[in-house]
Image 1: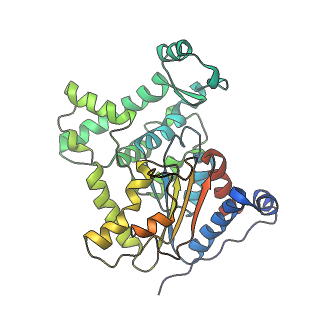
Image 2 (image 1 turned 30 degrees about the horizontal axis):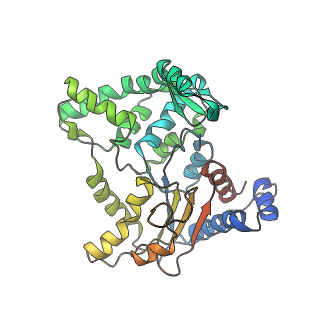
Image 3 (image 1 turned 60 degrees about the vertical axis):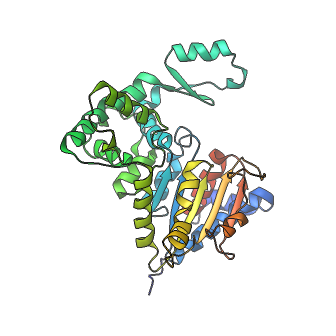
Amino acid sequence: MSKTATVPTVPKTAAIRDFMRRNYRHFNAATIVDAAEAWEKLLAKGDKMLVTLGGAMSTAELGISLAEMIRQDKVHAVCCTGANLEEDIFNLVAHDHYKRVPHYRDLTADDEWKLCEGGWNRVTDTCIPEEEAMRRIESKLLPYWKKVDAEGRRLFPYEFMYEVIRNGDLEEFYQIDTKDSWMIAACEKNLPIFTPGWEDSTLGNVYVSQRIKGQIKNVASVKMGLETMEFLIDWYRRNTKTNGVGFFQIGGGIAGDFPICVVPLLRQDLKEKARLWSYFCQISDSTTSYGSYSGAVPNEKITWGKLDKNTPRFVIESDATIVAPLIFNYVLGN
């Protein structure tokens, strides 16, 4: 029999939760509350939750709320882009050097070029400093890349990050409270982080440059996409033997497209009696459209063998930097 999780006691001063229940009664707002309460029900019956991170959620400092979700076992795995994997660490070690550009909509091409020449990489209203963030992490990761390469071993991208965190190599540079870093929380929990398309990231590019320079001999020392799918298959099988796994998608793209396919792979390609995802929610500003995967409504996923007709499913058409922290705090009982 599956073990039933204890429903957490909500504090009497659950200000955020109470505010949402009173004010968020209709439209997208109501769906936010519905999705949060369905997440609680999922956990209460012993199911687990996989969260996917697209876009620039780490630069948006989603870790402030996501880290606590991980620490309190509300999240059990993450699938993210290479950018989200690295940018939480960039923020951890270079936060004080970031530059905010609140008038970013007014920037001219000349303004943008000046930022580039100054070593500033802009993400909407936030500029990531090249030297203090990217080069600082590169200098700490390179010895691990070289060591694993020389020993003929192979690791996933997140495992290299965990090595650097656990060995304290970055501690001298910490500029935020570590409780606000979702990567620190994930490392403490040894959470699996699936990172398809790691090549599409700053550190992925840096790794290739080091290979071309001759610092690294074997580019395959980092495990990539298809092996990541095998890793995900193994994790999904182990975690759905007696219970289900939910799917909470922030943004679109490969971070969401990649992991949801594990179910039809198991059922249709491997002919296994795999469980369908037991919950689905997507926060996206990609409105419902024809031919856009990120704009596809959840019902479409039923036809692809990903969701059951009775799976709780939600679409919240809004800004994830606003919505996700609200849902997380609701589930945390704040």
